[in-house]
Image 1 (tube, helix red, strand yellow):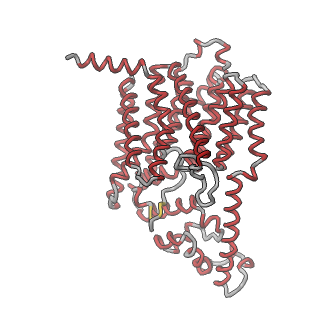
Image 2: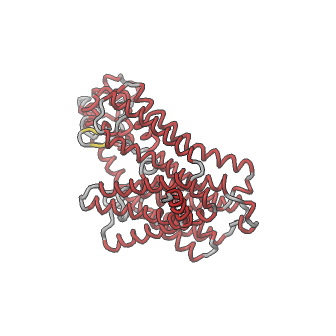
Image 3: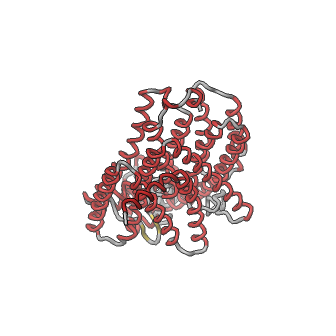
Length: 494
């Protein structure tokens, strides 16, 4: 039997159907998210969803490797990951490895984003414009699936709220608010631009209204930012391309202004009010407790900047051991915690979850006091105490604490390469490369990076990192692969 002939036939079959496969890979993404939600709600655990995601990762990776004409790059990627993982395992072994299986599984989640980006670049190299069109179709398919699922969740009353404690916001049949907010924020400028390019006003109205409505009811501050970026970006792209048109700007602008007009009844505003009220109440209580340490003297009369560290410790210990920082104090001791917080008495700083998690991991890194840990990171399971998870809620910080300066440098270098491609293309030939698509994907890329810096919803979440992989691959396609010379002037304007 001629196995090489069979392998060639299989490869040709995949190449012939690559566009349909790409659309299928896109469509599966929100479906996997909904599967995770159902398993979570029913208490069935996440083994099934993890298995499905791992199968998808293996399929995409093997397909990208097999059809690529640059397999050496995949081998370099594998070698880089192996070296980083080896250093990380060595750092964990030095401290005592508690859960190697869970820790390595988390490593795979982080390594997925660069791998998927490489695979999509391979797909685009093979199929060119046909595959790029499939990517656009995949974005429309995902947006439609997400929109329909959110509407159905509201109609049936089975949606998960964005903010559990205040029961505010509409997350739909999805489990993670930061990741879903990131996904919708990335999709919005892309779909609005594509709808504008179609020159179909009804499609633009429907797309913008559906996207902005979801962002509005998601209720995160970054979701509102995404709406503003979409409107502002549309105007800027039109002006720079010298094709300003009032109608699409009015359509998108009216949708944005409608969201702004009702901002005081939005989940975002209401949740912020609940939070502010709670912080004011806690600050008042904290001031009373600190006054107790001053023998009844009003705390507000204290000149905080001119009292000794010892007196600050005497005053602050009561509140640091009362609020959620009590777990940090139990883990690291009052002196280290006070120093890490710079002896602040502001309750918003003391109880802020994101800040608290960063401080926990900073203290953990200092406690390990190891060059290996600083170079290759710490074990995920060590970032928990008293049943609480202190894995940080900021992606770039998270990559550092988990994989050290080496892992962070590798991640920044990988993303930085695509920023270099953008700058190089624009400097080389602004008019050629600054297309409508370039503007849309550029906006989505900026939004993704903002989310990565402010949340843990992109780089370390396979569902949302998928979209960053696609963005990077399309950036490569638009700057390195697309045949602009084969297009007519009218096509270049689209």
